Image (cartoon, rainbow, N blue to C red; front, side, top):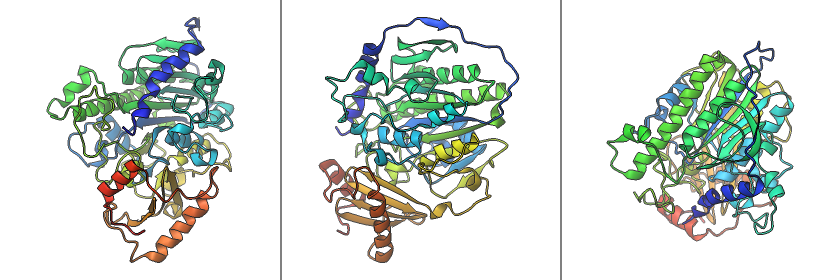
Length: 486
């Protein structure tokens, strides 16, 4: 199955970090009593979900069975993006772009097999840490060395080499990184700093991520902080507690029920994070981004396989109304839930239709922290666009290259190259179900030229090969039909 290799990382993390350390000694209780906050720079929180489709945030109003009241309230208190994009339809490259603010192909991390995130790449956490922010992450890292890596030989890589790529070496002061039961931590869930080590925690993985985030906020309440919360859900393996499953008893499809339950756990987490900010009087001094790392894998057609079957693709999430799925550069693979909320600073209950990217998170974060723009970043500071003081964001092109596919979006126009197949879509009037290239040949050629020029700036330059692999061919035949301009 195409994404079975994604699942192999679950076994790797435990093995890798066990080899690195078994020390679980608590160093010192670092809890401090509240003090007057002297640095009033805003806090930044990035919630990054895993394989959650566009439809599965209630605020978008696409499906009736999703229950995300806290995320919906986040959108109501902020700005809901209708054209929020990631830079890749797959986990590792998408995360690399988010955290660096750069197109990941510029440093060679084109897909999951090109891990880890190179050490010469600067993360948002590095930049904010240097600027005096306290930085933390809890949840799925997926930017270290795993057994899919074509960069390292896993039979010879050393524990010390692995450690260099862990989040506590990439700009994060405090981390609680893991997937299921094994976690690489230097903070406990009470906010105490501990020696970096692998620790077992068999509680529910999504609740653990939330609790670690809450501990970090409580600990750093008196100074500006950056918190990255990459929830490992609704990505397989699918699991949920009765607390969350009971909210979806009427759902007949098992995988949909579990997917909804996992998204309820994330939603509760968002609610608890916001409650903690309110309790600490930090709500109006904290910006929150909520984004998914790529569209949902559907495994055409949707198959309600037993949840124990981790080779089955569908994670219970949906990409409607967009076409396609994880692994594709159609909208279903790269257009995702995207919310930005900053009460008192950004407008509330606002819909924003211009294309935005995860690349913009880094540039926006630097601006919030009062830092000068970094020339190497590919994103833009979203704040003046979201508060209405600046226009023209729709004039910026966004680019993709993944496997044997490439695409560019300019405003509501999209040019898509899949092998030798070429498509042009007007996203304002259709959902990639009408190829307009025959009647708009000049526009298509201009966009293709821009895409080609961008691709020549990448570490491995050039447009992708003109032949799709077997799974890509199946996808494009199924979703867009075999008839396309070649």
